[in-house]
Length: 65
Image 1 (cartoon, rainbow, N blue to C red):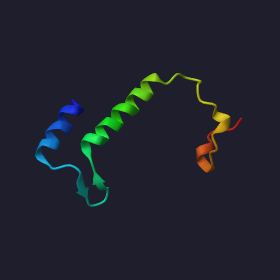
Image 2 (cartoon, rainbow, N blue to C red):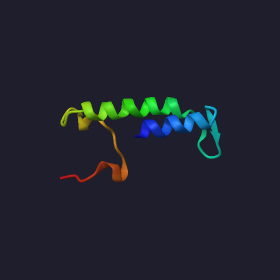
Image 3 (cartoon, helix red, strand yellow):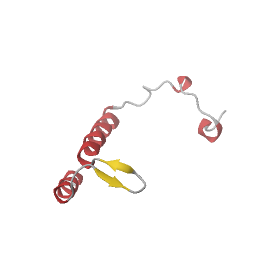
């Protein structure tokens, strides 16, 4: 469904497009990046990230026991 919308959008507008706040955006390229991110999230297994190696500050630290 999202791919259909991006295809329709790219037919109407020349890519990449200069948007006022976001800058230059290439919708087809961004769609490829999003598809890769979705696949990465699907492949992720719980417990595979070593939380001790991630440096977080302030409210990002979360609850400490």
